[in-house]
Length: 356
Ligand SMILES: Nc1ncnc2c1ncn2[C@@H]1O[C@H](COP(=O)(O)OP(=O)(O)OP(=O)(O)O)[C@@H](O)[C@H]1O
Image (cartoon, rainbow, N blue to C red; front, side, top):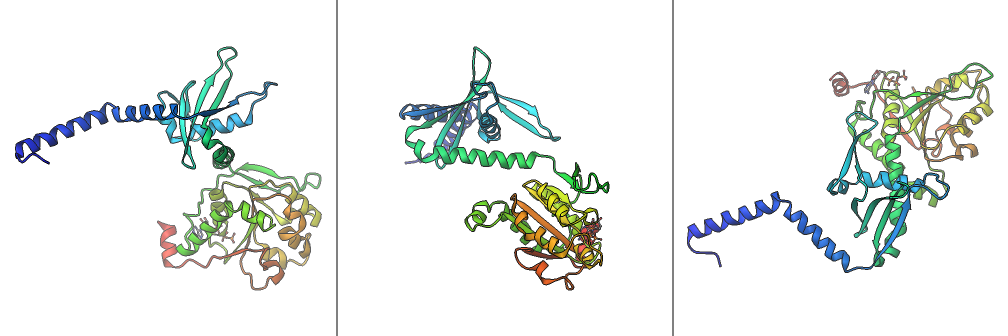
């Protein structure tokens, strides 16, 4: 099959290499692939769905915004012939935005869909037009739109600036009102020195919590999880809380129990927190040991697991303590505390990690 003459064989290899190099350099393979897809598309009946930028009352269509953010995040946007480059909100962030009349291809559950960015010649308004094969429509349309919603929500969550809310106000008139500041704590979970296995376990526990909405709903449970971080002072508990908030991209509500007037004030504070938040009470053991607590033990128990703690979802509660041995076991029972994380005094390897 191959020429016996070595010179001919060498010539054949060189020519094949040059042909392949030419095809690759001239984007001919890319073009052939495009033409093939074009021919293939002509062989199917399609259905079109328009997502206009504005409704008939000229209000912005939220779905348009979601689809547009979703499409601009796809790697295939970069394959379109024209795309615009914009700087993003964060430094080093560059956004690729589809130009009018450009088409981007997406794949979902092995079906290919096309989105075209249309601009109306009459009023300049835009619309995104979804082209989907009629055969795939029933199977993928709804799950695909749901997928776009989910991806959009995740992206928004990652992009938003995390805030720290504090109930620091001692003025009785204003007590119970949250004050917010940008949360700029430099700690990350990775930067906290602790046993590697334990860190991995906590990270994967947080990750699976984020994905467990259906699981909690199926069991009829509120989508929340509580952590107890305990160990001597100065062992990294507060830093770990900051790392958790950053990892989850949740706002932090730091409850200072000294500024809480009574049980119902604590209730109000909780009711005024938002979903997707991390609610922290530091040094709970010290507070529970105080003789003259403004908030009763039952107030604390209800805060952790009572009926009003269920108003809202996707919340993580974190309590820190120096020691948990003297604590009333009802405070620590499962449901009130789901995960216990011990922060021992630094050993030599942890010390090395911190001081690096
Ligand atoms: N394991 C650790 N990993 C990284 N940094 C640590 C660690 N332990 C302590 N530090 C550093 O020591 C300082 C105190 O840590 P942090 O406030 O997180 O401790 P804490 O356990 O919350 O203390 P307290 O109980 O007194 O509030 C911080 O600057 C933190 O960066």
